[in-house]
Length: 125
Length: 106
Image (cartoon, rainbow over the protein chains, first blue to last red):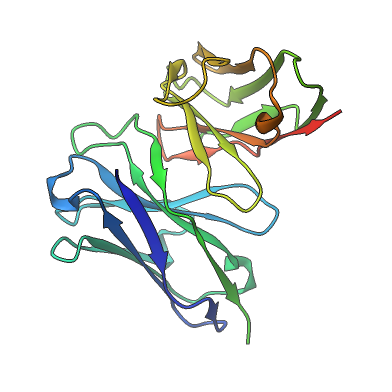
């Protein structure tokens, strides 16, 4: 059974870089035809897709965050990571990782399943 | 950007009721529409993908329909565990979620 788990600091300072890692178990990132994604949810608000990555390193980012986001993958550790730079209080959110059902063969379609449990990151000095 | 608008934003219903939630896209998205359920403090859970396909393990009282710009999620007979927030999501272009519909107990 595929499982995902987010890890990283729960606190980030304004203007600094937020860094999180997602560890995948029960399946291999490098043997998957799917992308792997990050989604966030500010407290009490809705869901926002941040970006996704294929095991080869090919990425797709939300245009609204693209200038600040870097997603990378380490197939040898079965992990993928998120870096969000120049954070502000508006970046305070629960950050989720999930398998993104899109493939390199089609930019459309797909769905997020399964999801990690999520990790709260607070941006505060 | 394709915007997704859900209605209603909140809904009160009773156990056993039939409930319908609507999601409208700002332009045609074919059938690239998914539905998720989220309970407080938990990650979203995929219910319906590609507008009308039931995800494995999801009870058959959940169903989805629609194509183009108008979509619906229907719960045929509400159960106590169904009270949650529901989100639609389009994957025709940059993945984007609706604002959510909170389903509460009447």
